[in-house]
Length: 239
Image (cartoon, rainbow, N blue to C red; front, side):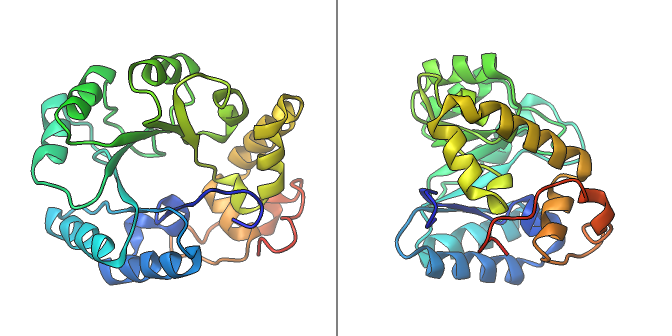
């Protein structure tokens, strides 16, 4: 945040969301809120158990989170009716964003379904990691300010699309200044895209965690230093 980030999105893939216990994830959320010092913090609340999701979102609301992010059902494709039911099943105590386009999310939310959930007050927005600029442009026009982009490969181009509310970056964990420069200067766009593609080839979130010496649990512990040998060192202070 000292290098330009407006807030934090906590507990996604870099935090091994599917592999931590509910108490561990809640502790990560509270730590981030303490460190943010009043900046916006959005927390991931996904779990295979709806009861655990409820625990996480209620605990986050009590701790003062700005909002919650709930991915679509992971690993197994489900139909649109079930996707909508996941979000409509309760009244949420925090502004709720749907995460579309994660690494293993096989049930995309269609634009019409998203806009219906928005119109009914169920969702407060979307974190879209599809990398589809045409989709982002349509959603930004239909729902200005509520859709964020979560794909580093297109971040610098997305900020120039009308209606897109913001961006969430994985590689900013290692190179925050590069991301900040790319968002401010279109000439840096190519460098940001090349870095994002190189990280993806090296293992994506696995490589970022290994570079930052964060360790990890299986399967996040299988990347070695040779995987990212060609990438620049993380910026000072990122580790």
